[in-house]
Amino acid sequence: MSGDCLFCKIINREVPSEFLYEDDDFVVFRDINPAAPVHLLLVPKKHIRSMNDFKNEDSAIISGLFVLAREMARQQGVDKSGYKLLFNVEKGGGQVIFHIHLHLIGGWEK
Ligand code: AMP
Ligand code: ZN
Image (tube, rainbow, N blue to C red):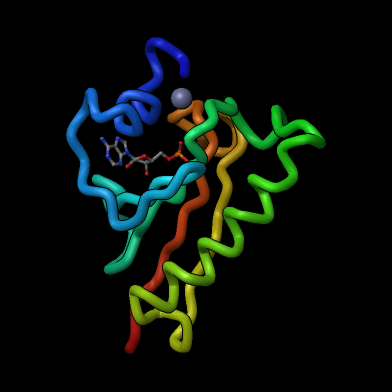
C-alpha cells in the first residue's frame, strides 16, 4: 500500500470503482477513459511502481496477470476477435499511474 496511490485506494475501496473481477492478488476494473469498446485494467493488489520494479520473487504476479488476461478476454468476448495487452513503463512510456497494471484493449470488431 502506498498512501497517495490512486490504484491502492481503489483496491482498498477508498475510491469507488466497480470490479469486474477480484481475488486475493488482483482486481480488474474498466478504464475510466477507454481507448476502445473494451478497455480493462488488470491490477495486482501488491503496490509495485512499474515493470522496472518487479522482483524475481514477483514472478507469480507476472504470470498470474497473463492468465487473468486470457480469462478476462474470454469473459468480455474479445478472445476470438482479438485484443491488445499493454504495459506503459514510466513517464516516457506513457505511464501516469505508478502502480503497475496491464491494459486489456479490444472489442473493435465482433
Ligand atoms: P497508464 O497510462 O498506463 O498509467 O494508465 C493509467 C490509466 O488509468 C489511464 O488509461 C486512465 O484512463 C486510467 N484511470 C485513471 N483514473 C482511473 C480511475 N479512477 N478508474 C479507472 N481508470 C482510471
Ligand atoms: Zn498502489
